[in-house]
Length: 341
Image (cartoon, rainbow, N blue to C red; front, side, top):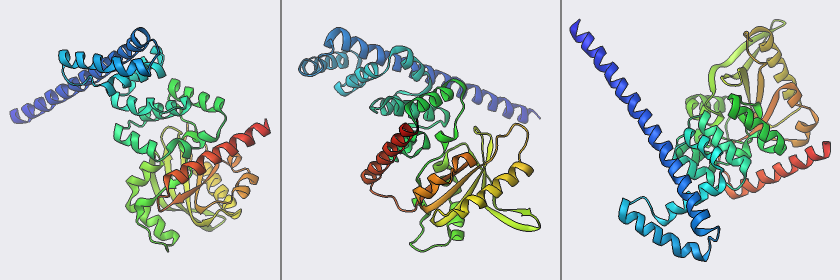
């Protein structure tokens, strides 16, 4: 009994130490980021006076040399430029919120993004999904913002959705669903069946969920539902924590076809009738195709039916080409929305 008590006591003490260390580390991280903002602001406004070119090239090495002499490493010219960038990009009231949520390494990655809404997107997603700096960098390199449905919405909508996420922690479906999805890690060859694709996803389920988003939780494969004594099977069924709804994923090898909508509507309505629990939102359907017919998708009003269609890629494309394609699709979507208004 004494040994058990001592063991329990030691475990409690270890937990107390770990929690305290974590709290101290977070406090130190926030304080250092605050210092970096203050230094950047002071250098920029009181020393450089916004003349960053020739004068900055002369004065920053001198400041760096003196600070390094007195305080050791960590005050290189690049670090001072990071401080200046931090203070230039973010007003102090916004910066103070940021350094309470993210560490300096994460802030450095985000603050060099030129588009403010895109910066805000990555900052908020890094916070709610608890990305480390490595994961954040991977998401940015994979063009997550451009692949997310929110990027194709008007700027006011993006700003409102980000504010809703920042203020209330509420995600909208447009911030969750992506197009395309990268499934290159599945190791599929040029020829495979829908069953092969489904099996490969389940083998790499954790990586699949990582690509979908960390709030997805797997529920079932080939879930059988019965309508008028006829059996149907849902390929993959998930639940999304923050959206508070079931998510049906149907896998298709070819391009999107009109019949897919009717099939998905049947699944969603059955789930809404038989599987929804109190407090849940209506289920959402995601049809993953190896190709897309944009006009079909536009004409069929899938958003009104709570259905999303996205392409999946089993081989990573040239990222520059993909970025160009995604930016063009965003431009087209914005033009269409402007025309509708």
